[in-house]
Image (tube, rainbow, N blue to C red; front, side, top):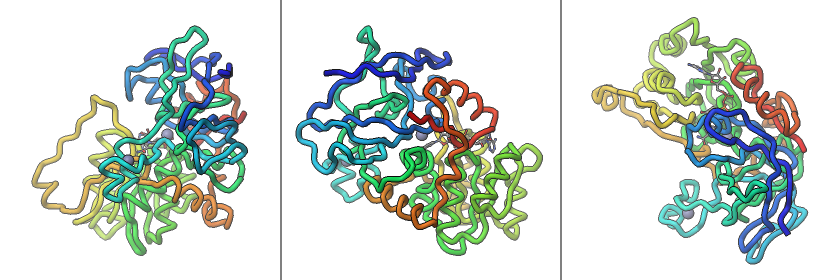
Length: 360
Ligand SMILES: NC(=O)c1ccc[n+]([C@@H]2O[C@H](COP(=O)([O-])OP(=O)(O)OC[C@H]3O[C@@H](n4cnc5c(N)ncnc54)[C@H](O)[C@@H]3O)[C@@H](O)[C@H]2O)c1
Ligand SMILES: [Zn+2]
Ligand SMILES: [Zn+2]
């Protein structure tokens, strides 16, 4: 029997979100129904509401969630009712050409639930990042529900997107190593996780760049050794002067704008790596002289979900958290109710929070 529950829906481009009754089907083959306990507000949800990701309105928002498996469909192995899970927006299929090459973190055919949730009048909802978790129960593909040790759901859920993306941008995509210098552009939840990842990897200098002093103060708490306010100072010049005139080994862009991508490109040392984890809008372009691209060497690397492997990385990161080696709680600025998501978007835009997390 389908479930009628409350969920946060983006009705059309730029319109405020609404809390609506959502009809969630029972799990079919290969699907899992999760009772959501917490779901963080990520900037990507706002990108959806703004129409910057796709035109497939209405959207069921929310994708940074943890909860407990309520029911499983046929042909589901590895996860059972009662399991505490973090929901992943990429679930490697095991059979696409990338999985078969042994690179499941790039999986080209990641799985989602086959059935769609709907509004009460039957209008199908597009689930943000194939999840849709600002809702009391959500339906996902079995591989998206990743069992982890039981901790506070508002903390665990953040691994489902922003914190994993940032940690992975530094650790997996950027391959930050001991003694490296790193710059992170944008110190929201994603950027601060990249800072924490760079510190964990042994970077000797981690330079945080943002346009809000409050964000720079938080970045220092995550281990940034230096901060640059890009509203007051040219960040490329500042980063060069902090690195003996050379630039950094790894520059991580966690805003999703052309100007910060270019700054990250030019803030690198020779043979340095640019990691692009911020999500651009379809209209954005950058222009780079070919000689600068060639002459500087190194690598320009987009980072999808921090190139993570959820089944490997989620439980491992929770273990680091439990051992006191990764302060995930610091990302949770506030817990809010389902009705407060629109206000949380405004607080995010005003730079007042790292993560607002809906708790159920
Ligand atoms: N690649 C992925 O898998 C992935 C996953 C999650 C989020 N994202 C993306 O990462 C980006 C950051 O997400 P978030 O949730 O941390 O957002 P956020 O809004 O919390 O943080 C963005 C930060 O960028 C800062 N900023 C804005 N303009 C700037 C500028 N010109 N220079 C320096 N800093 C500037 C803001 O002050 C803010 O602190 C978004 O584009 C989001 O969609 C990507
Ligand atoms: Zn695959
Ligand atoms: Zn996200």
